[in-house]
Image (cartoon, rainbow, N blue to C red; front, side):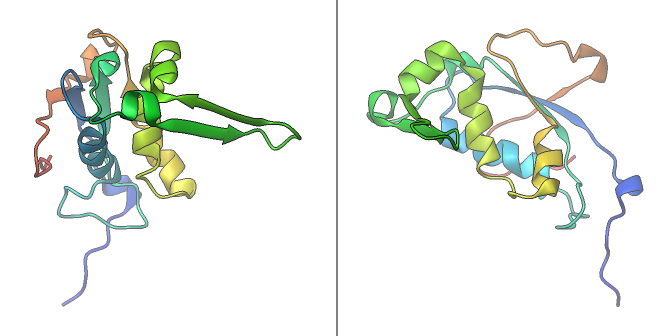
Length: 149
């Protein structure tokens, strides 16, 4: 018996919409990354982009537990001398609320060209409106088991 290997032209992609209001950041990011990679599908192949598109709305209303709002620090270095920058989760949320979900999901995807392609299928919006109504997005429930397309 041969193992099945998905081909890029055979992959069918669905569109999912997730409401982040009241959700915990890490738990939401795990479910979204799983769907972006396509690990919820039986034809998952590690070296092929099998994932679906995910639209996250209400990103500004995402929750974090404990004292992460003031204690969690996002660090970045530009590569130049004195180019080290850092900011708290609270200041990043006020400046760019979509970046919280983007950074959490990006860290859970492969750090390769394949991961870059999978990350482009994530669309995050701060409010409840999004411009992807024509794609007929299905609502995705956030729980312990990811849904199958």
